[in-house]
Image (cartoon, rainbow, N blue to C red):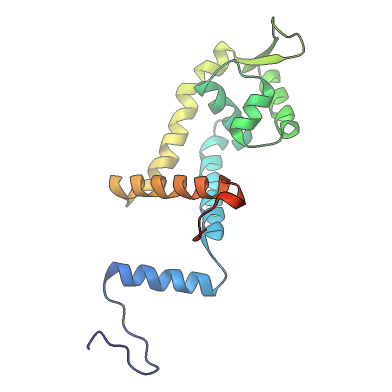
Length: 176
């Protein structure tokens, strides 16, 4: 077959690029674009992570709070909720649960008595060695079949999309 389209007959796809374009066209016709795929991916990731955590008697929300404190101990509740990307009210119950389990402690700020800072307890810190491998396992499963170049490209693309969407509407380019 020549590369010219024939009347009314779809051209067979040739190679991965053509297959990717066909997949994209199909998704767009079905009303499934980037947002839908991101939601599906996020949901699958969360389900897989929760499956890993359930054996350790932790929820995904508890993990996210502990993970944030593993990165930076001593944050305020507002800072924790901002880093996780949830409302402060949603974070309050999780912090209370972690405190009841003696995994964190809340300490009043010496500089501003209105502020509380959240710190891991030794028990909470010890769980790092148990819980971080859960995240590593889920990351490994998600990357199965992908090359390092694929993963780096994915990260670059997602970061670009985030930057594009976080810009004010008036500052977006003509293709946005």
